[in-house]
Length: 105
Image 1 (cartoon, rainbow, N blue to C red):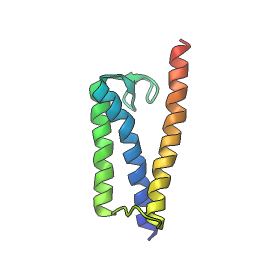
Image 2: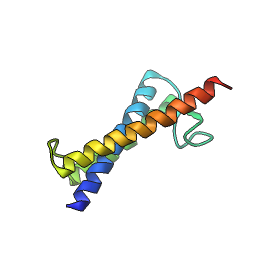
Image 3: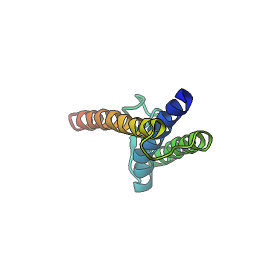
Image 4: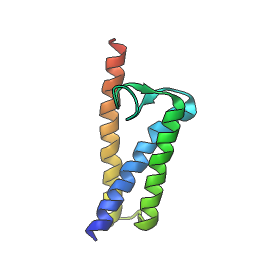
């Protein structure tokens, strides 16, 4: 049971992280990735973002195939939602700061 909850948490986190990278890549915009310099703060080209977003989406899909997420009020569904929400908060705060710092330079 605890393994399913942990897996569902990471499924939500990887799915959430795929969204901004896929969106930036498909819009042809640069966006920070772990491969930028400095990692997570510098900008990576659109193709890198698209591929990074695809990898995150693939990891989420693999996790979901082995540990199915049931979107209803269960521990697994709650863990999925919590992973998605917490990753979204972290990304919003981090990339908001990156954008503010980019404008100030």
